[in-house]
Amino acid sequence: MAKTQVFKTILRNLIRPSSKGGLEPVEELKNTLERYFSKPIFPVNSGRSAIYIILKAAGVGEGDEVLIQAYTCNAVPNPIIWTGARPVYVDINPETLNMDIKDLTKKIAERTRAIILQHTFGRPGPIEEVLEIGKEHKLLIIEDCAHSLSAAYKGRKLGTYGDAAILSFGREKVISSLAGGAIIVNNQNLVKPIVSQVSQLKPVAPDRLAKEFFNFFTWRLLLRRIYFSRQGNRLIKVLNRHDFFNVVTASKERVGEKPNWYPAAFPNVLAQIALEEFANLEKYNKARREIAEFYLQNVKNPDFKLLPNHEGIYLRVVALHNEAFEVLAEARKRHFWFGNWYNAPVYPKSVDEEKLGYRQGCCPVAEECAAKTLNLPNYIGMTLQEAERVVDFVNEFH
Image 1 (cartoon, rainbow, N blue to C red):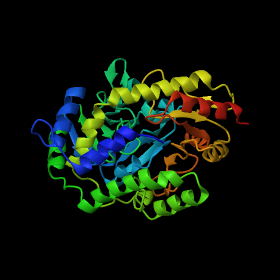
Image 2 (image 1 turned 180 degrees about the vertical axis):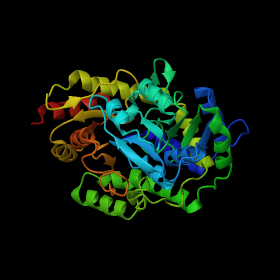
Image 3 (image 1 turned 135 degrees about the horizontal axis):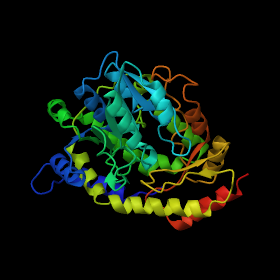
Image 4 (image 1 turned 45 degrees about the vertical axis):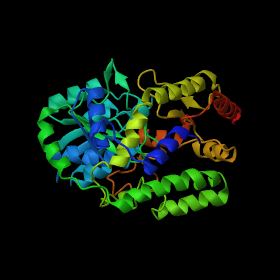
């Protein structure tokens, strides 16, 4: 899997950090994003931290409930739990993989304080309906734009509809600085408490930052080269279980506990990487869309259900298949970089669903879609010739 531009950007900034216009990179990133969204922006060290800070700023805490969709990442329920509140899972629409409005309405209760609206894989969620429900019930609306940077709905950027929104610059996001995120604020009543919280954030510990870089280069230079071998894949799984390689989901997060590095300030070295990646935003999303449209036009195997996305962006190209595990196993043998976001109602499968507040059977559509989910490769740097080989594999799979 190639992402040469990102690799070069990270390497260059690690060796020779820089800033633009005399500003610290974090301040420059803040200014750049504020110009882009025309809203107040607050960079932080992750999307998880962004959710946590918004909820705390709004006074959400012990005894409260926050509605989120199933078919999501643990990064969404975890910060809710850290505030003392409880995540309540809403089922999804199988055609969009976004929140189902009927189930959302059923699950609003006396203790409901907020709705986090996820724009899954860059596809706009039912924003108008959610805003109307939020207004009727006086609920805080947070847009989860971790997958949807630059996506719009009816000509207006996602992230500018709700009371607040979060961005993520983590691994495999729309742009990546290895880690990092930001808060977008639309409700002016949230600005002062968010400023207060962000101003008190501690810097990311040097050993944590070093681990981010070490694991990135370990992956780029070694582990991805042995990923497709049985022994190599086994080694990676062992490293993940011991938090050696997988810094994305720490062992504490798998059981709803808070690692000590959340929340924290956005490191300058990562902000500089995010700035340089942001300059490539439209190019990256155009390339992803070209690959996605090639798949949509050329995959003819009726056993694979591809979900088109006429609005938004394609962070992932989703194909649903009744034997997704078998497809992934065969794709690995052929050295194809298929993905499995999300192969569980709360991703990854290794989390303790009960401790993250999820009860099996509460969101049956999400569970069914998760069991069928595949991501066709559309990584940065992928060529149409590579996509042709994927299409041939998919069309021939039986």
